[in-house]
Image 1 (cartoon, rainbow, N blue to C red):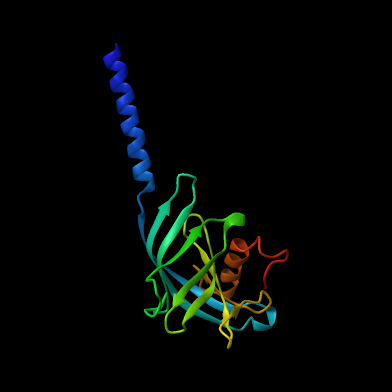
Image 2 (image 1 turned 45 degrees about the horizontal axis):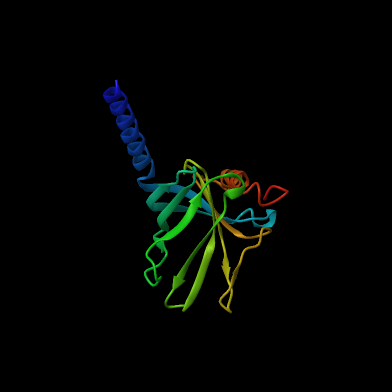
Length: 179
């Protein structure tokens, strides 16, 4: 009887440890999206550009349900972070709700400082994303304006579809929907 109990406990422990290891192993992610780059605001409704967006990296899950992406973002061939960055990858949390919205930043050796590209909002299942792209200022800072800021949303082929994704993923950032 003791021997049977030992094997059941030992087997259960091995199974539990195996599940934790499997759950925590990073998952390879190579997603490509077609999206729309546009400025917010009704006066900018004519400005839109179709772009390709790639996420190439790994997604790591935590025991508490959080996911972290570590890799590169490629927007129409422009790799973020660029080759002049100190580290070859960006890192941000994946999630929706109030925890959504992570800064895309890196240390650029050519600029001799921290470069903030923007803020990414991404769905839990990584099927949709919005990037609020910062305007770079002359003195080295950056800013984004919710009235006419530059936004990239995917997957979308029209400004209207991109705006719907933006409003869904950024719903906790504004009391009123973006236009």
